Length: 161
Image (tube, rainbow, N blue to C red; front, side):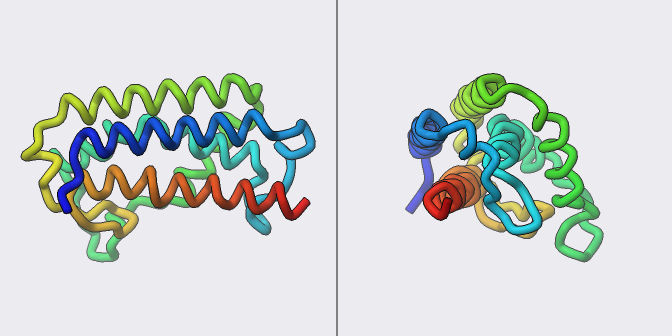
C-alpha cells in the first residue's frame, strides 16, 4: 500500500492530538516518573518528541542528499549522542513550551510533506540509524512507529505508578 501525503498529515495530526491528550492528563508528579530504566522521565520523553516534531524536513533533505555511508549502517551518526543533546537543551523548559514546540514542529512537518513531490516521497532510502523504505514509509514510521511507541511507554510508566 502506498503511503500518501494525506496519510502522513493525518498520522501527524493524530499523534499531536494523542500527545496533547496524554499531557493534559498528567499530574505534576507524573512528569517526573521514569519511563526508561537508566533513562528518561516523562518530561524528557516529551523533550525528545518535541525535537522530533520537525524532523520531516531533516528526513526529506536526507532523501535529496543522502549522507555518505561509513559501511556500518549508521553513516557515522550517533543517535544516542544526538538524542541526549536534544533532550538536554529542552529539559529545563516549562512543559507548555515543550508542548508548543512539539505542536509547531509537527505543523511544520505537515507543511513540508505537503510541499514534497510524490516522486521524492516514493524514493527508496536507508537512514543512518538503519530504517529502510520509501521516504513516505520512513516519515510515517517515525510518527506511527517510533513516536507512538514513546507515547505508549509514557502511558505504561504513569499507570505503573
